[in-house]
Amino acid sequence: MSQLEYPTDWSKVTRKLKEVNQEREHVKKVLEDASSLPELKEVTSKLLELVRRYEELLIANPNKRVSVNIGDYTQETSLADSLEENEPAHLKVRKQRAKEIARKLYSKAHPDLGGTVESFRVIREAAKSGDLETLKFMSMSFDPDIRSESNTANLMKALEGKQQAFRGTASFKLAALYYANRGRFVAKCKEVLKNKIVNLEVRILGYTTYQSGAEDENTA
Image 1 (cartoon, rainbow, N blue to C red):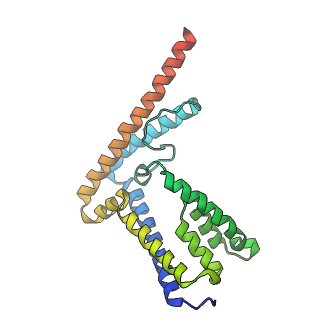
Image 2 (image 1 turned 180 degrees about the vertical axis):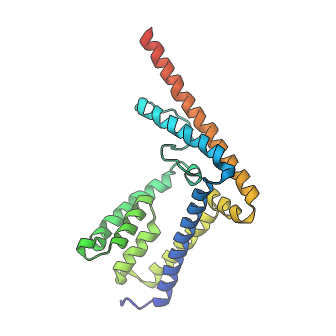
Image 3 (image 1 turned 90 degrees about the vertical axis):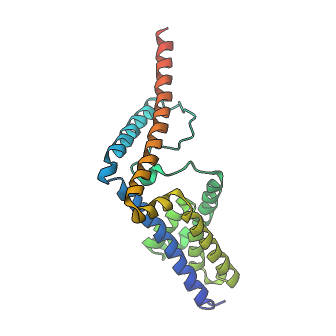
């Protein structure tokens, strides 16, 4: 099978993958930039201060984990981070599968073995995030023999499904609101961040209560 046997379908897949990735990067940038809006400065500063306190508690109590389903705050630095959910089971499966595909691609993409720095970076980031669609695209790029009509059509369908799912997320809807109604956007951002603050305060309270109990036991 030649590399140019399905040029039209492959061109559509290439454009769709670029569109999906650009959409995600754009939403991420909008939400990251939103953290610096003057209207959100107070609530953002409070969240980041709580994140700092929480990190200190994690260091002080490395073996203690308070069971509150509010996500991991150790890496939160922006509104985009505050919208992240706990990692679902299906994403863990995708990441495992992504690592398996990536291992086969590294030898082809590594700059020292004839690949490019950019290709290697794309594969590494896709493996880290569980982005199977990008990895399948890279596999088909390196090996045109697997770029059959059915494989191309299946990849296109997967990309379209991924795009639709992303457009249904809170992050996408909030970013769309940024352009449609700035006032409502700011109000919604404050709501999201304040909910995170409340939940984080609950977790911090759990740690401080644990610390107090441990101190009482030591003095008894």
